[in-house]
Image 1 (cartoon, each protein chain N blue to C red):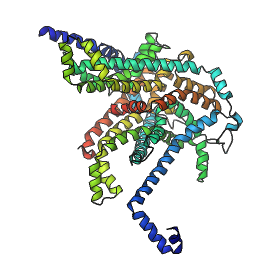
Image 2: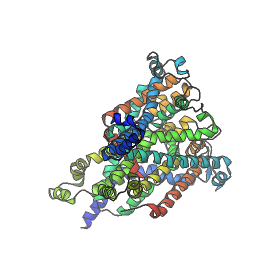
Image 3: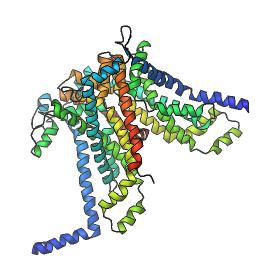
Length: 292
Length: 299
């Protein structure tokens, strides 16, 4: 018996070996190192200098950091409700038992498969103020040419809209799976009781969908706080820092200006923000999420 | 009915009322409205792709026209030739393929082995270790990115394939292990017991029973990690600066630096960069949708 338990200990660890090596080398050790680095000023070339909490204090004092944090929140607040609303509409429409559902789903999923670099580059062209397709299409409904990415006021909305275009298919597919879990008998009996399609949606479908919705809100907020590639390709954070977001600022600090300690302290801040937001949502979920 | 329509407005109103009330017609109308809305949405998705292809065939003078032309006057392949002359897209494609396929297989291998251990072997400290695994999924990649970069630099791994491959395997491993462990837990014990009676060891059980039974789950996980790596810009951006080792997204990003406003060339490059994955998507749509939506379960 004792030998078999020892044997289990050995085989158990052997099976986990690749996993454990990767975890220690590329997650656990880096996390500890990142914590340590946060207390140093280091440009990667010269000797690291211990500065205590200075990186974090500098962060709190930096106007640029607060601007960047504000932009990230702005992006999140703009993106999450809009993209989920659009995705929900698409999912509801696809769920009407219509013909060609697979074909529609295939089209809506196209941008999801395409890389962010390609999408961002393409949208830079579409948003071109002078020769862009978007301004041309808008001219049909009498909207004068808009400056989009070249204006500090419009650049962030333009980035947000691009994100909605790219991600709506992804969230629509998740919503669609949730919608298919709504029991058909329930909808039918409500229909017999005289509830119209709108009331059926509000009183049955939506409550039944709240677990999916809860989960999708959590991941889309996490994703939004980590926005990076689209901003890097489309605006590089400009014009005048109008689209500069947290991860881009971390990237700039670490890999352009080689302020390793400062960049790490910002990454920890991002972690704390995401962690607290997720925790808050978990805490308040029983107020609105309906589990059968 | 058309005649009655003409005779009096009152009648017409009644007819429309009747038309709307009749259940079948109501259904037809909603179907029609649904299709109209979906077609509008599909157009919004499709038009940018069309514009990308159309621009890629235009001459530069045609690119800078307002109002823009929907179709190129003459289909020019010179843009593609010029882009291919200055940028080794085929090389980028091979790099992307090599890195992503290796990452996908690496993720499958490490996750399946680890998940089997977590699901089926009673060893000391297993549950604590599993909790630790779940905990690491909370840490965003930005925290570990800088230390990993520093470490790779010390190892002299900047501008190597392994610097792209290993961190990307680890990025998907805790989640994949968790996912496969949940799947392995659902498999009945009886299969294994029979195999143990036949004298099979753990590795044989894993290889001949668990792996074949979980093929669809492994394929989905593989697709998920393949796509994650294929479209990733951040890691190549940090780890690679030699053109020989660039992946498609990084190659495209540097192309943008080269041809700032030559949109016909840039779009030709974009078409070349997205073509392989879109072709695969058309061929194996279901696996793509399943594989990518998996990240939604990650949370």
